[in-house]
Amino acid sequence: LFIEGKVPAPPLTHLSGLVVEEAAVGSSTWSIPASAWWQSAAGVFAGGTLGFVADAALAGAVFTTLPKATALVSSDFSTNFLKPASPSSGRVIAKGTVIHSGRRQGLSEARIEDAHGTLLAFATSRCVLQPLPFDPPEPPHEFAPMETSRFDTPGPYLRPVEGEVVPQAVWDETSGLDLVQLWEKEERSPAPSCSMLGLRFVEVAEGVVTLAMPASLWFCTGFGTFYGGVLTALADQAINTAVLTTLPPGTSFGTLDLKVNFLRPVTPDGRELVARATVEQRGRTIAVTTCRVDDAEGKRIAMATGSAMISPD
Image 1 (cartoon, rainbow, N blue to C red):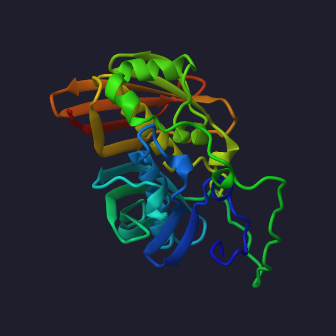
Image 2 (tube, rainbow, N blue to C red):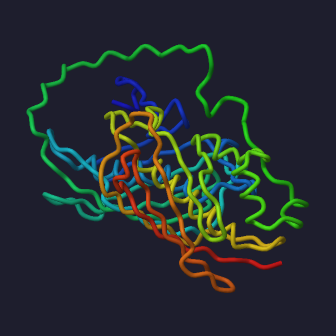
């Protein structure tokens, strides 16, 4: 029904262009345009962007196997990154497949590719299944097509991009900590991906970063729930920024993997979610970082771990 346009598009579709392209029992394919809004300060897409799409395909694949009156909640998400995406990728496409769907839990896997068929990442997820506490009404036999909503402005992903991709000369001359401190002081424009998610730099030190993001209705699914892919993108941004604060000038890094555990649901009340990332181990070529995400009341809603490969010179 979502594919056929017979139920309303969720806020996530208007925000990012996220759509479901194919669905069958045990599989689902979702994609977003490779909008320049997803660029990091280095010009490529952060790993969290790939996770943003993958979460829909992973949960969607399990959802296609469920009977009526059954709810699905993502429990954990794990991905391994192979190649970065960029606006030249055309689209970021996640193809999810069920591994197991039982009475209480479901497992799924997904391949994330660009429009050219290049494999960007591989992800897995576990979902918890619960019966709804009521009998939903029977739907009508025929669904009429929904009228297209009309707005004075296009969806955010179609608007002129805000934020800055940092020139190479700046990377060559500026340490990561100095650059992040400029973002914290608002003396330099943040990356487009930070503007897309409404991220705010709260606290910065070497190896430690705190970011805040509003629990906005823009981040809700068609079921009215807060999308786990947004929490994945938030945690990834915090982890990446924490790693960046440890780098000298002329040094790059790439995310290798990311694991997120979702602990409690988020209420989209507009109040800030806070992500605190700490580099636990910084070697010559590998950094391991943890992140915790709390809601406005200080309750833990997610925890994440990521590793990155550092490339000197």
